[in-house]
Length: 121
Image (tube, rainbow, N blue to C red):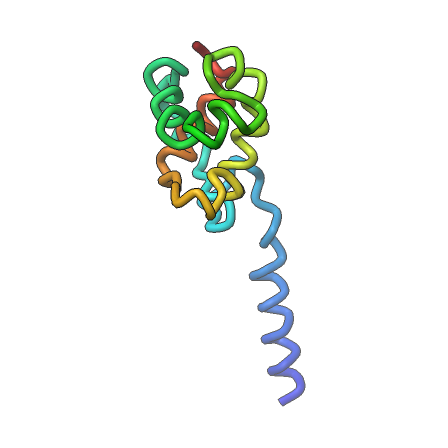
């Protein structure tokens, strides 16, 4: 009986020993909605892909348009804050729950890919 429990315990340790070792580019993570880098197969650009997400979800009245710093009025503003935007959208802290706005997993991944690709205009 003790031997069987020991074998099961070793098996569990081996099976779960790699948990938490996923890199940022690892498998989809429910906590941060990140997908593997392989999903970044297409180029992402600010004007066509990122600006529409920012304009609908971030650069709106009462948020990053006029009263909340930083402002996201143009490419330069967004570019300067790209890493923070990526981190906060991936963690789900932006847009805030109180805003009633949410980003889809695809929008979050698009932002992440854009930053990984050097945030082209």
